[in-house]
Image (cartoon, rainbow, N blue to C red; front, side, top):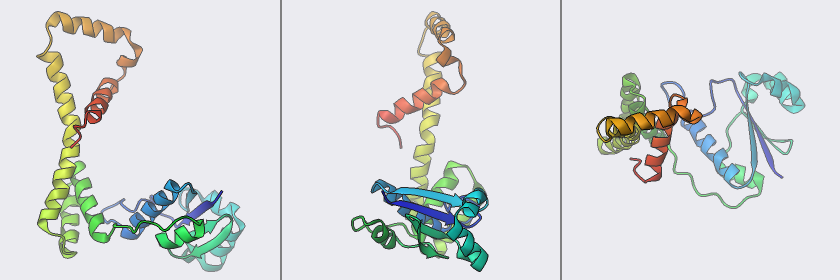
Length: 215
């Protein structure tokens, strides 16, 4: 079985979308590793700031750090053989090292990353984030129409749980008689699973999505 081990430099996370600025290289590489996993390849990833023990325990990684310092990272090993050091390899290189079929060309780009970030800003109600990524996207030539599509998609996803809880409240407060509501309340009280906060609302959200109403 092919095993990839990626040793990243010190950073808050490997997703590439943390903080105000999206790192398209990290986002692209994370997508490439997900693609590798979909091909049945085992992928392990280590962050120097969070898992220093993994770096110290690997002789070749430890030697690379002693020789080049953090410039040796990221370092990629395949079945204990070092394949790259100091850069994130392409999907084509990963595919060749793993011995898997020709990969589907990635459509992820810096402009796509900014559209994703705009959607995330809408979902998190972050005004500074939206303004920052709007400016970045505009400088990259992204049209306002495309930015609006990203906003609309994010808002649709965001609105789904809000609709679900509103429908739940309406069903309890307007759609049932007081007697039925009281009976339901007693049933919920006798059910241990219903006594936890967020338990029933999570169920409503899941059922809403399963009905194809997300977005």
